[in-house]
Length: 207
Image (spheres, rainbow, N blue to C red):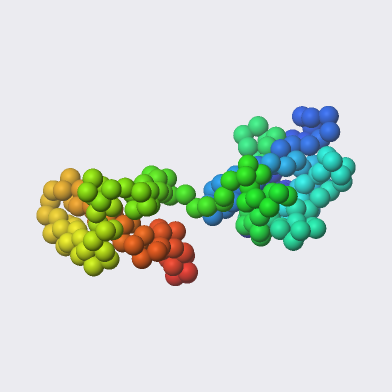
């Protein structure tokens, strides 16, 4: 459902001579920006009526529903105007790649889920696993010792978290929690998975 129905929106199409305003397209799940298009009133009306994002194409000089030829539609999740009422934020569920080049985004970037620092940490773990010297890198040494050792470390850290949870030292509790999470990320990669795979399982359980 849209955040605002069209009757409640106060979009100002009159700020430009061609009555077009920018529409920023964002993946509702990953939060990545996929593309930038332009809408007039008719394009906005059609987007809301069909739940498929429609732009006014300046090249074609007509309304253009994204995916009308390729099948790579942008299914509408929500839409709202900015504080100046002259730009739209359109959250979507993309069906296939967004860019005509076949890329996920028009910036030639992969539309991957990003978990901020945890994603950065996963990348570091992957790099150490692939390239680091087991004698100099703790992470590399764990991978070298195998899945049993990594699983053992996760178990040990889990016990430490439980112990600290029953105490009143919040700093120690958070420190042990960080150790557990760190070693769990290592275990995931040892099993050939990433955090995003666990998130997908959790999403499947959402009611």
